[in-house]
Amino acid sequence: MPSEHDGHRKRLKERFIKTGLDDFEPHNVLELVLFYCIPRKDTNPLAHRLINHFGSLSAVFDAKPDELMKVDGVSESTAVFLSMIPQVARRYLEDKVDASRSVGGFTDIGVYLMPKFVGRTVETIMLAALDNKNRIISCSIVAEGENTRVSISKRKVMEEAMRVGAAKVVLAHNHPRGFAVPSPEDIYLTEEIYSLLASVGIELVDHMIFAEDDFVSMAASGIEFRKKK
Image 1 (tube, one colour):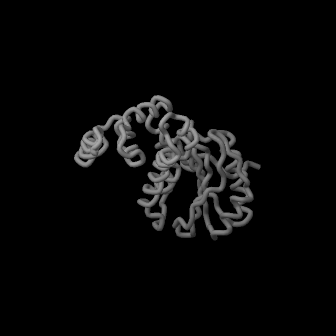
Image 2: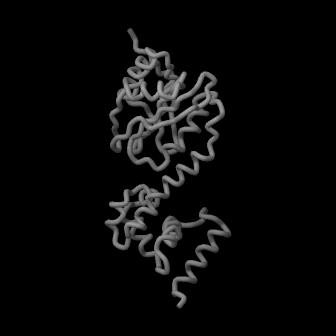
Image 3: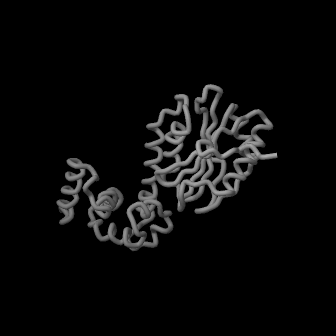
């Protein structure tokens, strides 16, 4: 038998097909998403509970599955589905960036790297390796930490750069709960890694800080990587 909620679901889907999500309220977006993991049930109350519990639509998607399952009505399948959203978005954005082209400056490398931090709620350090023609040959995570701090093995950075045959590299990391501003610790770390890479003939050309939809290039900001004697 048709459910009393089928008509509402149909109307919400038709609204999305016609206008997209631009005029949807946050709970409507979440309600629509929940249709696909909770069949034949009114998902509106759960959408409101989730947003009230976590504070925003993005916070719901950023929550870990075990945190989501603490909310009444959220099964393991639903929790996994919701927590996939930012990571699917990241893969989508990464796939749209042409990594084979040469990068001409910090804006190009920033555009390439920014999607890689979408949905990351812990501080993550990445290493983008370039060849002599400034083409990106690889990008890998070299360290992950907690919300506001991460420890990194400088030797691991050097070994990864050597492993992929990099002529140059760009370091990048995010400030998940902060601003795209390098800290004194960031600058000191950059100096240490610059010296280590220089000892094996690899140039560290930049260290970029990402926060939400903003990024800052240390090189473009005039920060010197080479240690002062």
